[in-house]
Image (cartoon, rainbow, N blue to C red; front, side):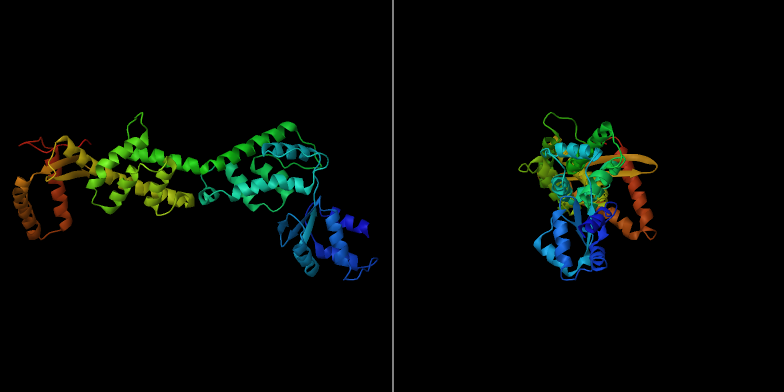
Length: 394
């Protein structure tokens, strides 16, 4: 009988076999064992071979055959399957390399299931602790993506270590029945180590790219104080003039001196996307790029207005207006004009005359606006006269 049980377990080395087949084997001649006794024999055999037999419940690997699992096995053996595995030959070298990489102590004698779990568990914990962005983004290298998927899909320890991860790293699976080369194992270890490092640094890489993008869209010049210090100074000068709610919040977060660099860029990214960057997907990242470009354009326009007021030593009662126009047939022109209290009446009279023309115009409003834009373009391009407005650099 025990020989038959060992034969059943040995036959499961290539693929898992349902335990109810073993029950049927013991129930049939020449054994004819009664149903009440079979579970006791099977459980004893599984416990005796716990070191080299993996057990699965509904396809999920069971790291340990606990009391509750045994009770369920007795009641519904069809929900359980077993697979025997071997760690010998080149697999021993692979196991030792991975154990060393993960800081596990060397194993003396035969490598057992619990030893494999000592290596597999840290890898599974690692991938499960990745934030949502790192678990879902497709911006990693093909090797890192394949390693991540293998770890997320892992169900069998030996299958993961000796087949799935090697394939993810571009290596051939390591079989107990085939000789292997030490240099192939070393190459696999290096590739896996690099992929894990890439996954681990994925979120930091995202935040760094956001910092660089922010630096680019806000056109920050090199400064020994660092990019953030420059942005904080610029934003603190703008915040008080920001009437647009979104621009006001954006400027305030740029100027925030309290948070560390990581929390600072996370705060800005969360505001722009309405979602913490650790929870992003790749579409969120793409949408932020567009949103950042839009709000940065408004920030630079407001900043130009504020700088022009400062450089022109304007009074707090002066009104400042930033004008810009660009078309497919002419380059962009920008101008900041300031209106003192004693000029307000004259401006209002001109405004009234222009509105009268607009109200009397019976044609297309679109054509009127186009004509007005061209007039503004000419006004912006003209040489300053009569103590003229300050120009904003293009």
